[in-house]
Length: 251
Image (cartoon, rainbow, N blue to C red; front, side):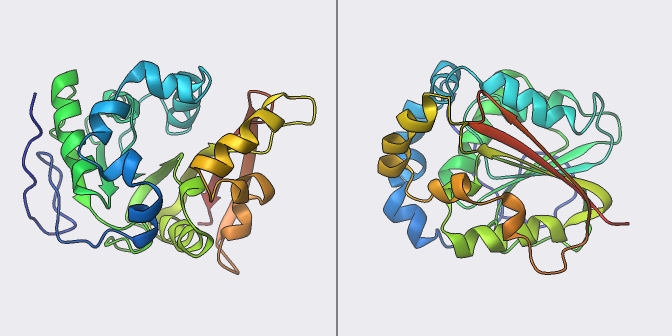
């Protein structure tokens, strides 16, 4: 199925049909480092394959996806923000958890990814009537403070230089409601006994030049000073190669 054309609407359009807002400038680091994975016309054709994204995560995609979604509950009746489109069926499974009052905003800085989300949800037969796909930069979100009950950032931080990562974490926390959850899933430095501690270094340093920052620093280290976080929980997976960090915002 061919992608649905983007439609220009206000950045906080009410829930309804899939939507996007333009224009947004694609960051230089994304163009220079990840053009082959997210921006090239053939990128979606190559990487939008469930078996491939699962292989890239060494068979852990479903486990990590479900761990993130479980933080929001079996039935989601609030407003959720997904920061960046994701290859694989993450968004489709998020949509399936929506209750009668639930809605989802998905933002991405790349039009090709927004268009892919349109097509992917339609092909999956997912109910997209309460999904807004919005063209926005994660480091400069166009949402009001505390506008979302939960915010999820799935395998995005490792693809960002430090300054952009700090702004993205700060913005994600800003738009999370008091008492709401900010959920990160990303890479993590494996335990000493894990062969992936050594196997992944050349892979990440070659293809993911910012990823070692996520190995060597806690996600909490990129929070702004005095960040209103009431609780922080961290769990690692697959010998420590992956992590889930959940921050609950102060009421």
